[in-house]
Length: 83
Image: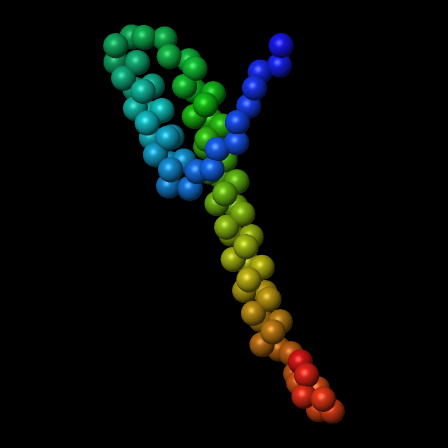
């Protein structure tokens, strides 16, 4: 039987809170000498998601800067006053 999945919307700060909570769980498990391997995979997935979000934000910033620069370099049409 195929395992069900769900789509969950989280902000970057919410993802960081989940990562911190998972790290705390791992640290507590080590302190009490409890095997807690399930958190590692989930934490790594959330770290990957956070990294992708950060890269997407950087790309978006770069694109926006380039678009502003292009718009700033455009000259008006002398005949019809259009851009």
